[in-house]
Length: 290
Length: 130
Image (cartoon, rainbow over all chains, first blue to last red; front, side, top):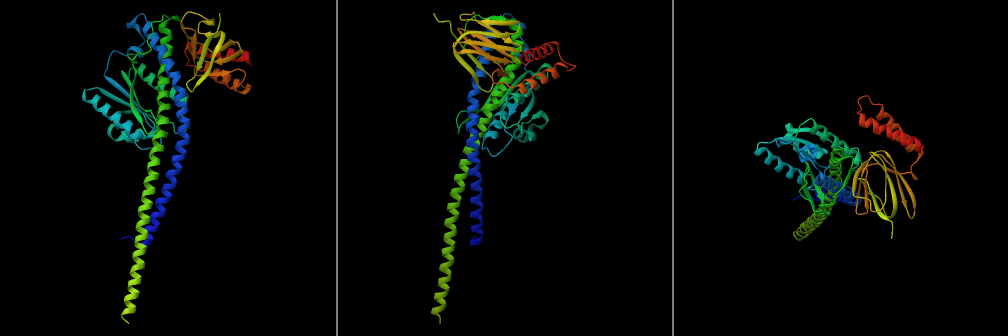
């Protein structure tokens, strides 16, 4: 059995860990509120953008000559996967969930003989994928220095992707991120952004639009912007999810630490009592023997 | 009969402005300025750097935009833009910064004709504001 001193030390160390996790939880909660707000505020933009593109692609006259970002390069051989994770750890299953989703997608692609290329956004994803898919990672982007997700960063990622597409380095691009549902639930998502998936047309309208200049030119301008917008959306969802995941993970940790402190305290008291009883027995039996 | 329609300006971060008592909007469309009144035909166009002017019951608002897309449909005007500034709130120093950035871009040697045109346009518009 551990000595009284050891137990005391352990209790203090668990208590100080608990203090840290509690503080982290508070910080995450405060950040979550902001991240959630900006994720919700950012939704109208990406939705509107999607609508416009949907209307445009419906109105396009010459389907064969549609921009490649919309119709694809005609092949499906090389897949580019953009895995978006956080830069910091201690956020529960947040990164692990994305990686799991991505890995199962990779395995599927490899099984059917497709070529795979990976871009990681955020250092945690890079760390975890380096071991198994290190030779496939072509770029690692990290925004450790920017405090909040901003459009400028997303635009940078978008431009890299488009540049690679124009050089025909890949045919299909998919992004992986966590969609924020609520504090305890984040759903890992795989979203194909090139070529654009226009199947989900709930808001399809038969409205006839006038275009100025013509459709092709607008599309050529709009599609690259849409890529950045989608990435920005993913970044916003991700940052809200990250804070949510961290908050619930830290909440759990705090609770577990509390339980541990209780258990250790009981053990401490027991051994203290045992020591006293032992001493008493020794004294009494000593006195009796006189 | 009312002559009003709705306008919504959104940027990636948030919904920037939303008004439903607008009588006329002038947008700097790519092929020239365009005034939009109620019951305009559905249109999609994109913007070049310039000034959006909104006339509404509550007065007149002016915004500087660098790029964006306008969509007008069933008396709803949506403007999607990544960079927009209210001319009433924008500061002189910020304007100077924007001019500087645009000038740097315009003077890059490997710039394409279209981006050069856009950058020059930016400078021109910004200088008239100054």
